[in-house]
Length: 171
Image (cartoon, rainbow, N blue to C red; front, top):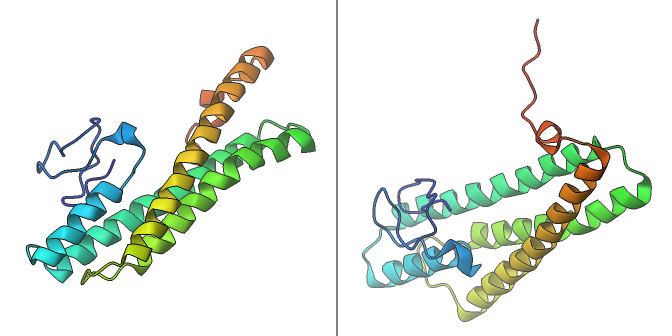
C-alpha cells in the first residue's frame, strides 16, 4: 500500500508506514486508501495539513489507483496470449472488468476531492461504495487466479512467462 503522506510503497500489513510512521491502515481490512483519506480529511478540518500537501497526497492516491488500472490492462493482455476460445476469454474478461471498473470509479472520485477538504457525507458514501466494489472485484480476481493456476498446471503453461516483463528489443 502506498503511503499517501510520504509516497513510500509500504510492504508491511500496517498499520503504520515504516518510513514516516504515518497511519496507512491495515492492508487486510479491505478499505484500501480510505483510512488515509479519512486521516487527511480530519487533518484538513483541524488545519494541520496545508492544501498543497493535501493536493500532493490526493495526487499520490490517484496515481496509485491509475497504476492498478494499468496493471489490470496488462494482466488482460497477458491472458490474451493463452489463446483460449471466445467463451473462455469472455469469462476471463467477466472476472477482470468489475475490479478494473471499480478502480477507475474510485480514482474518479479521488480526483474530484477538493484538496481544501470539507468532504460531504455523500462523498464519503460514494467512496465507501466504490471501495466495496473494489473489494468484491478483488474476490472475483482471487477466484480467477486460483482457476488460472489450476488450468495452467493442467496445460503445462508457465504463468510467470505469460506475465513476465517483455524483453527489450535489440536494434
